[in-house]
Length: 409
View 1 (tube, rainbow, N blue to C red):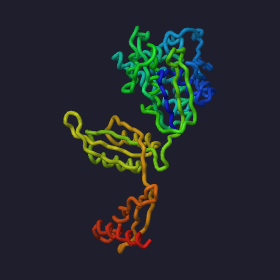
View 2: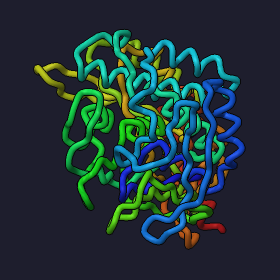
View 3: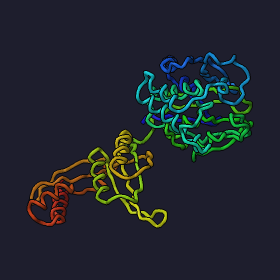
View 4: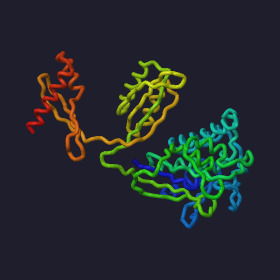
């Protein structure tokens, strides 16, 4: 599994992520083409800079209204945000949908702006269609988000992970006045992400940076065992003494034992569904490729009894099985995670019983030692039905035949 790990020891913003993507190997020409495809009158500028004595890549979004480079008004935001035109969500989504970009890039970028719109609507207690996008509606932020989606797709990462976030401290001046860091929109977008404050007082995670983490569906975890194939440093807008203003990105393959593989776990709890519907949904999930589906009774709030549905599958099956759960059940939300699965080596041996052949599944440890052996249920069931004898009788006979075959070998 290909992993992208973001080390946000000095926060994250749109320009920092674009710089890290390019520094890690994403062609700058791809980001330039993506910007041109948006047709919003913007262009990108690439330069090498130093932060804390470390070389890094800085990517700036330039528009006709962008003032000459000078002292930044905030930690990460590009010049020009404050004077950018206000836009509604529908206008921004129209720009993205009309661009000649891949569906995957469009879907990610659209989701990012919908998340921002929902956060702003909650903060101001207004309908989402009434939200005015101030900084986040600026041309440079549209470019930041769409280019980040394109760069992430180019890297072919299967799983995005992230360190705890240094959000900074102090205050930030925004459209609504002087507010504590993190700004309300940033805080709403971060949700339950692990955060802390270190270094000089300043804004270190911007609303754009926060929504990019949501867009990538990052999981917050320590650096996993991985073989690093590429790394990149993206620079923030200014030098910060004692705390290099950098975002580091590591790209590589998960380093696991040979007998270890990744497994996706999807879970949802339902308290308003017919048991027959859940049984049918479980069958459909298995038919669609799930490794296993199981249901367990759980006690929910207000004394209600619900059913927890758990689905085990390959990570690449997540989108299909997730959508199937939404279509076939009454759930309106679910959670998922990736775990590591260790499986014993398996082989099959066919034995002869008085009623027919049965396959024996044999599981071995890495040393070759047999850890377990069991008759295949379906073989035994068919013989039991055909000959009208107890299932356990067939299973016992199969194991006796296996023991005899093992002894003779």
